[in-house]
Amino acid sequence: MANSNNFGSAVISDSTSNTIYFMLRKTADNTEQTGKVYSDITAQYIRAGASATAVTEATQTTNGAWSSGGIVEMDATNSPGLYRFDAPDAAFAYGVNRVIFTFKCASCYLSVVEVPICLEPGLSRTGTASGVAAQSITLESGAPHTTDEWKGALIYIENATTGAGQAGICTTSSNANPPVLTMDRAWGISLTGTVTYRAYKGSLPLSAAEITAQITTDVPSVNTTKWNGTAVATPATAGIPDVNVKNIDNDAASASGTVTFPNATLASTTNITGGTITTVTNLTNAPTSGDLTSTMKTSVGTAVAASAVASVTGNVGGNVTGSVGSVVGAVGSVTGDVGGNVVGNVTGNVGGNVTGSVGSVTTVSDKTGYTLSNTGMDNLLTRAITEAYSTDGGTISIGTALYDLLATLQEFSISGTTATVKKRNGSTTAFTLALNDATDPSAITRNS
Image 1 (cartoon, rainbow, N blue to C red):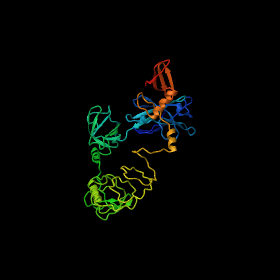
Image 2 (image 1 turned 180 degrees about the vertical axis):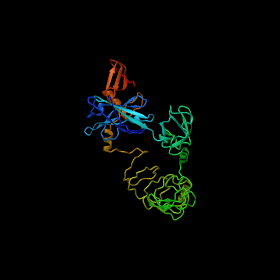
Image 3 (image 1 turned 45 degrees about the horizontal axis):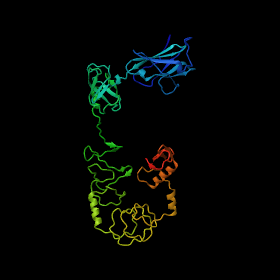
Image 4 (image 1 turned 135 degrees about the horizontal axis):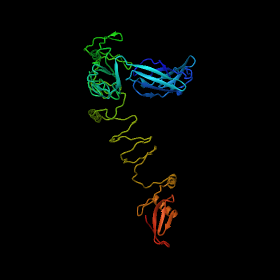
C-alpha cells in the first residue's frame, strides 16, 4: 500500500526554493521508519498529465539553506519518520495545477505527497518569447492564439539581456501560432537576449486604460518646491532652475563677477578657449611643442630677433640647438665634460688640455703620429677574433687570413686530389683545395 501524506501546501507557480515534508513507514508493522539518509531514498515528481521526472537526491541538514534534491531526517526522537525534501524548482513551473512527489525506500511503503500549484492573481501565462520587435512581442509556439486572445492583457518583461522590468498593454494579438502581441507603445529599452515574460489578463488591480495612463511616458512630471526642507526660489527663467554652487569637490567656490562658459566643447579641463586673460601670475606647467600658435611663434621670433642678449652671467643648463654667430670674448676654460656632440668644425687650435672625458670620436681625418699604449697593444693581441674564412678569389682580412692559415695547418683531410679543410669544430667544411696529383702532388690551388 502507499503511504499518502498531506504535507503539500499550495505553491505559487514558478516560485523557487520550496521545501516539503514526507513520512516514511515500515511495511512490516506500519511504524515510523527512522535513520534513513538521502542515498537510501529514491525521489521523483509527476506534473499533472506528464511523465515522472527523476530527482537527483543530495545530503541536507534540518535547518540548511535550500538545495535542490536535499533530503534529511528531521528528528528521530520527537518526530520519528518525518523527512525534509527540497523540491526542484522545475516541479512548480507554470502550466499545471498540481504536482505529485513520490519517495521510495526499501522496507517502507511508498510515500506520496500531492502539492497544488496556484497562479499569481491575474497571471495567465509565463514563457519565453520566440521573437520581439520595437513595439511587439511574439509568444512561444503553442500559446493560445485566437484573434485578440491577449487584447487588454498586461505583459511584463521578467528577464532579458536588456529591457527587463518593462511592461505594456496588448492592444491586438494575431491568430498565428505563435501569436504576435502588439503593444500600446514601443518598448522604452530595446529587448535583447532571451526574453521571458509574464502575462496578466482578467482581474487586474487597475484597468488597462489606467495602466496605460501611468506608463505612457517614461519621464515623470515633478514639481519640486523644497530641497532638504528649504523652499526652492522661483527661477529667473521658467523651467530652468537657478543654481548657486557653493562647493566643488568639497572645495568652496566663489566668484566676484560674472562667469561665462564658452559655447563650445573644451579641448581639455585646462584649456580656456574664449575671453582675455589680463595677467598670468603663475604658469604651473612648462610649455611643450604645440602650445603656441603659429601667430604667437612669429611674434616671439620677431621680438627675440629685434633684441640682443648683452651677456649671460649664469650657467646655460640646457642645449643650444641653433647656431651661434660668433663669440667675441674669450672662453676661459671648460672644466666639466662635454656630454653632447660638437656638430660643426673646430678650425682653430685647442691650446689647452681637455681634462674631462670625450664620449666618442666619430671620424679622425689625420691618422699619423698615433702610438698605442702597452695596455692598448695587449688588448689588441689578446682579443678574440670571430671565426670567418675568405672566399675563393675574394678579399681577405687579418682575421680571415689567420683562420685560413690555421685551418690549413691543423684540420684537413685528403681524398684523391681534393683536400678538405675543416673549421674549428673539426667537422664543418671551411673550404677545399685541389692537388695536381693524388700520390705525389707538387702544386695546390684553392677550390672553394
